[in-house]
Amino acid sequence: MDKIMDMLNAKVFVANKHRELTDRYKKLKTDQERVIFTFNVMVEYDIVPNATGMPKNAKESEKLREQGNKVFIKGVLNNMTCIDALKLYTKSIAFAPYPSEQLALAYANRSAVLFQLGLHSECIQDIDRALALNYPDDLRAKLYVRKTECLMILGSCSVEDILEEAQHWLDKMSLNDASRKKLRSKLDTLHYKAVQTKKSVKDNSIRAEVKKSGNEPPLPTIVSYNNEVPCASDAVAIKYSTRYGRHVIATRNINPGEVIAVEKPYTLLLMQQNMQTHCSNCLKVCWANIPCNYCTYAMYCSEECRYAEWKKCHDVECAVFPALIEYAFYNIDLLSMRLAVLAIREAGGMKELRTMLKKFDEYDGI
Image (tube, one colour):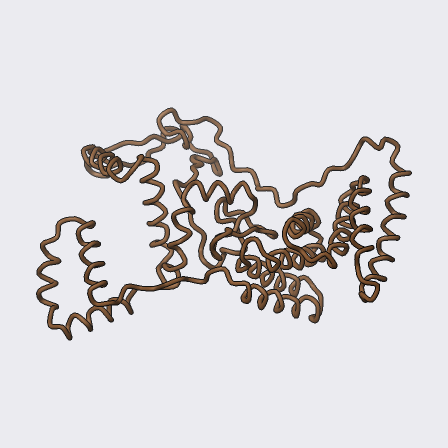
């Protein structure tokens, strides 16, 4: 933004319009008038930002995936190299157009890292995502074999359908494919293990469910809630005085470690460096996140979170955030925009929000 302001000031001074525009600006009374005036001046002097951020890009996705391959396949395999590869594959997923082969390949490659890290439930999720997209036929057998391994590790004794799919796609592979023989051997081993496992299970109707890892820790609980402030304990009360203004006081002795309030924020925003490691909606750390279908910034822990944030605010932000981030807007600026979107929607429109805010201004102590 500083660069844009410097460009604008330079052009205004050259045109000898600085004093005139400053005088006109001083007469404006509302923020809306100031924004419109400033935008019109920027248009007049041809310095309207033409920022696109970092849009979906198949070549960039491919490049990031290849970088991940170098780390994962050619590097010394340990947890740290796996994490490095995981980050690159996740970035590849973020940049891949939807739907596309690049997206399918990135999901498949990330599933290999997740398997290596022992995150078998997440591995299955990525495998299913890859197979649901335009994943190459000659590589599908490998994914079905990997999925079978995950299910068996997780305790499922019902893998016949997955093994059949693996066999189906293995038969379609070229006889000259170097990986065909290795996959055939692994598939035979899995067939044998599946039969042995089924024999050892007395009641075949009892099947182990695939458990999701990474459950959220429970929020602390409040013993006795406050009638006036729903998020707080009855150990506190809100008071007002001319000396302190509005403030909170204790109504009784509060025990060490006692929780006095648990309140969800009106809204929240991830730091930019965490956009590909955490869910943009619930902030949960995520090993196998999925991207927004339209931008490269927002990623989510599940379809539910992606849908929830789209309905809430991301349908508006999606086209704007990339440009703001490219021009180095601060997180507080992005959060302010999100607050505005949510407030306007909650109020029912801009006019209704203005009316609501005027009513708030009429109350003392708020």
